[in-house]
Amino acid sequence: MSTRIPATLIAGDGIGPEIMDATLAALDALEAPFDWDAQVAGLGGVKAAGDPLPQATLDSIRRTRLALKGPLETPSGGGYRSSNVRLREAFKLFANMRPAKTMIPGGRFDNIDLLVFRENVEGLYMGYEHYIPINDDPHAVAIATGVNTRQGARNILDYTFRTAIALGRKKVTVVHKANIMKALTGIFLETAYQMHKEKYAGRIELDDVIVDACCMKLVINPWQFDTLVTTNLFGDILSDLAAGLVGGLGMAPGANIGQDAAIFEAVHGSAPDIAGKGVANPIALMLAAALMLDHSGFHDKARRLRQAVSETLNADNIRTGDLGGRADTRAFTAAIVARIRNG
Ligand code: NAD
Image (cartoon, rainbow, N blue to C red; front, side, top):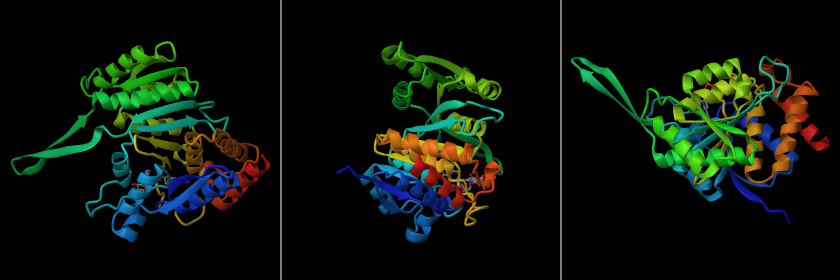
C-alpha cells in the first residue's frame, strides 16, 4: 500500500477557491498521495473564526508540517497583521524559493531558468518602525530598523547552497548593498563567503553583485545568472522582477521552507477584480503544487505536472486571458487533466 501524506489545504480568498479546484483536479489526475485537511485563513478566517489565522489552521499545519495555500487577503483596518507574515513567523519559514522558468518560448526573454532565494523572516520586514514627533508634526521623522543575524544568514545560505547543488546548479550569486548598508547586508555577504569556503568550495561557484546593478543586469542579460540569494526586502523585489521575465505573476510559484513546516503557494494575490468570474489562470498554484510534490519526494509526478502545463500552453495552444488566450479556468484545467491522463 502506498504511503499517504497528511497536508493542510487553504483555498484562500478571491480567486483562491477557483485555482485551488483546478490544482486539486490536476493532483487527482496524478494520483498525488496527499490526505488534505481543509482549513481557512485570510478573509475566510475572519468570517469563520474572527481571525485571519485561526488557531485550528495553525494546529493543522503544526500537525501536518506541509501546506498548499491559495492567496490570502489581509483586511485593512481592524489591526490585523498579514497572515502570510504570521505564518512565516509561526513556522520559522526562513527560506522563500521562487523559480522563474520560461514556460512559453519565443517571448522577449527566452530560455530563462532562474532560482531566487529570499531570506523570509528577518531584515527590514521585522516591522520595527516608529515615528519621532517634532513640534506639532507627530510623524516628522519615520524610522525603520532592520535586523539580520549571523544565524539567520546561515540558515538561508546553507539551504540555498544545498538546494542549488542538489538541483545541479552551477553558481550562486549573493545580492546585497554592503557598500552602503555595511552592517545589515554586509553580515549576509560575509557569511556567504565564509560558509562557501568552509563547506561548499569546489561544489558550486559563488559570486556577488550589488542589488541596483543586479536589477539592471537582470533586464539586460538575465542569462548570466543562475541562482540568486538575498535578504528579505531585496528578495521581495527581485523575485517579482524575475517573475516578470517569464510572463508575470500568473506563472510564479513560491515555496516557503522552514524548520517547522513547508508551505507552497502562488506568488500572486487574490485578484479581487476577476474573482468569481471563472477566468483566473491556475498555473502558478499548479507549479506550487509541483514544488510540493518535489519536496515530498514525488519527482516524477512533479515532472509530469510541469510537462502537462507546458504541453497545454504550447502544443495545445490553450491559454487563459491573462496570457492572451480565450480559455476559462475550467477549460484550461480540463486540458491539463487530459494531458496528464494521456501523457
Ligand atoms: P493580485 O496579484 O491579486 O492582482 C494583480 C493583478 O494581476 C490583477 O489585475 C489580477 O486580476 C491579476 N492576476 C493575479 N493573479 C492572477 C491569475 N492567477 N490569473 C489571472 N490574473 C491574475 O494583487 P493585488 O490586487 O495587489 O492584491 C489583491 C489582494 O491579494 C490584496 O489583499 C493583497 O494583500 C493580497 N495578496 C496576497 C498574497 C498572498 O497571499 N501570497 C500575495 C499578494 C497579494
